[in-house]
Length: 173
Image (cartoon, rainbow, N blue to C red; front, top):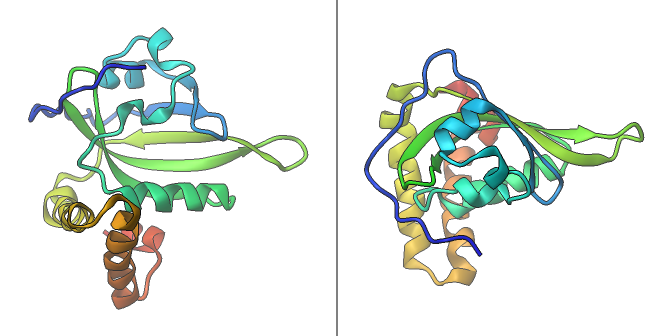
């Protein structure tokens, strides 16, 4: 079992030309990661390969966003999402992620491919961070079984108000 990491307030900002790339199997186990992933996650390639991708999950990420991500890619659709990740030293980095299903020659999903790039800071500060904080606050008010349901209602209300899917909302920012 891996050691618990304590989040810090240290942010590492991606460079404009950075692309973090990884591949996982259908359960989220990392099968490939590029050097920029290794740099930002602050793990070695050996430490990352074979681990669940949630090794870089930051506790500031609402559970309902991960639920939406998994539901989308498992239904054979790609998704774009803002994600806050945590490195092995507790520092964090924001990304805009594009995640797509990978299929075999028979069309069966056999994994997922993710490319992450530097997000727009203004969108993060004005829209994503406050909204994710609102979702997290709702999750914290509820017991484990109701966390995603409670924050999911807030997410769905926002999307219904805007008449958009999550994907359309993110791409509209």
